[in-house]
Image 1 (cartoon, helix red, strand yellow):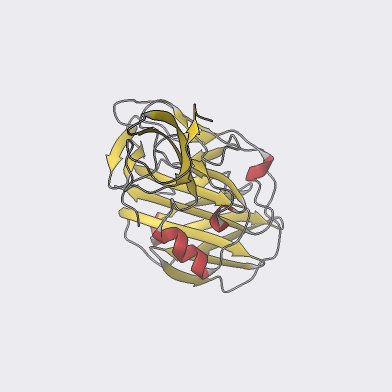
Image 2: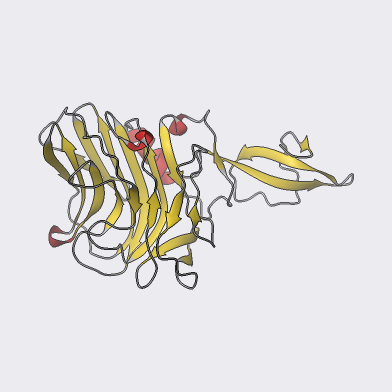
Length: 267
């Protein structure tokens, strides 16, 4: 996995296979303020509840991450029809957890009204819970430690729901459910369900397409690969100024020629 996040302002490259079907991509790389931008450019930006500038933005091994706990709040994204997972879907995330009990959420639109991804502490599992065909349906991972850093993917293809945790396939649900997830007008909440996460949100992607195992492995190995980086570069010796689009590469630094087309004056 790349060891650093793309900078704020990075957008999705829609030509990349993993970008197909994306309806929201939040990198939590802002580092300040109360807005969490949606890198798809579709406008599903989040707003921090109960802001606490002293604690909510923290450094991590991948770069800036959003901390939920103590006096800092979670993130709310306004309700939108895009966020209704009516067929195949994928929810991928990276989070940390320090402590806590109950049902701290990763992302939810209401586990009793539409869908939720959260910790199920009493059985030490991640859980996807949704209202399918008018009834509650749950899919759990195998057991996990109550605290630590986690990369997880829950994906649905047809009637089959599959969890991947830390790159390991946690199995397809023993039953099948081809029902549609209920439609809701709830906001999308990140970092809370019944209780707050008590940890950090590192990145979160939601797609209306299911992913096959090889695509999941690719995403978990490099979650930034479907991003464009819009940055300012200075070219020597002419010192021409402009913007360049390129796939994210943390090893190319501003002030060097990345070898792609320069757009004078910016875009």
